Amino acid sequence: MNNKIQTPPLPLPLKGGECLADSTHAVAIPLPLMAVCCWLLALLCACSGEESKPVSAYDMWHEDSAALRIAVTPTLDCLPLFLAEENGLFEQQGVEVSLYTYQAQMDCDTAFRSGWVDVMASDLVRTEWLKQKGEKIRYLTATDLHWQLVASKMARVKKLSQLEDKMIAMTRFSATAMLADKLVDSSGVVNEHVFRIQVNDVNLRLKMLESQVMDAMLLPEPQATGARLLDATVLYDTRWNDVCMGVLAMREMDEGVRTKEKEEVVRTKEEGRGTKEQVEGLLKAYDEACDSINTRGLMAYRTLIAERCGVRPEILDSLPPDIHFNPSRQPRQHDIDLATSWLKIDKGGRTKEKGGKTKEKGGKGKKKGKRR
Image: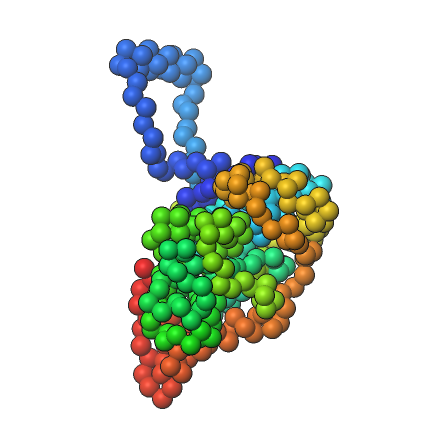
């Protein structure tokens, strides 16, 4: 399946960026022309001899019942998947794969937990947190997702110790939240004096930097390159201390997932998704795409990156030339331990529990605030 870009609304993903349930564009049609169109439509329906039935959003989604559905984000770590779809590498391996692009990791989570997708590009903090919430997840491969903490030129922050009274854009229960905590801890600044602001959409974060409404933020590529072009200061890069949080995660296929649109259980194994052969074909196509990118370089896929990540030409021209894509491999245990240890230990000696609660050592549990 060789689709260009798919930006589905939530909770139901649709291909091609369309949403049947919502229309934001209206076109004014003159009344005489409208009358003629209605007459022609009635004539065609009468000649057909059968009543036409509208195609529901669920029916369109269900057409992909045999395909392995993957939620991706407009970030460079998903480039091997974009390339594998664009060049038909999945088909060459005999597997049917559909990519669904979401603008934020939390949207991928929603689609994943609702059963609309089977696999998602994410990070170890989010997936380990979802495991604590009861989701059965296994890792297909680690990915080359890297984050940079960048500070706005107007914020006048040149080092971590200058983050006091500044705002950092990140996502709760994600690698960005963990990195923000650890970097603030290492800076010597009072933790409560650095404000974490939840901004899930990475492209929106970059726009907030452009409009100078955010002091600092954690960005992946290619958005981080866009920030550097705005003369933002790079305060930290996960490559500096070899932190690798990116993963391609898959739901364990031994259970059904109840959809919200229809009172039925979609059993992915019965529909032929998530089989050993399908996963092997997916990873072979992924490896082939990584090899192609490393051999030809990022600029060979300039158009594909612009289309799938939605970035300007000047950002493409400034991407780091040394970005390397590793073949499929399991995430490293010490990266998993880094994520799980942060999820367990909170500030002030508090231990995080399931359900988003925190418990003081020797004290009562206290419910966390709602997500903004």
